[in-house]
Image (cartoon, rainbow, N blue to C red; front, side, top):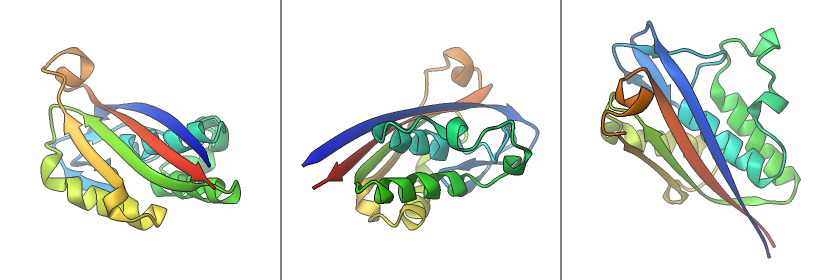
Length: 159
C-alpha cells in the first residue's frame, strides 16, 4: 500500500466585511478576509495538503492568482480539483485534519458545519474530517487579530 501525507498552510489578513469563509461556511464576523479568491484559509490549507501529498505543487500552480478568472472564486473549486486529481492518480483520501488559528471568530460553534461542508465537496465521510481551532494566546498577527492562519494534513492511500 502506498501511503502519502501532505501538509498545507495558508494565511489571509482581515479586511472590511461582515463574515469570513472558513472551510466552506460563511461565519458571521465584523471583518472579512482579503484574498484573490474567497480567502477561505481552511479550504486553501486542505487543498495544498492534498496537492503536497501528490507532489503536485500548490494552489498557485494550478490556479495562478495572476489569472483574473480566479478573482473572487469559491475555494470549493480548488478543493474539488485537488480531490479529482488524487482520484485520477489512483489515491483515496483517508482523512483530513485542519486547524484554524485565530482569536475570533470562535470556530467551535461552526466546526461540525465546516466538516459537513468539506465532506460534501470531497465526497468523504464526515468522520474522516477534523476541523478544530486554537488561538495563539494573543501573540503574533493572529493574536493581534490581523488575520487568520490555517494548517492542514491530508493522508492519501493507494492500494
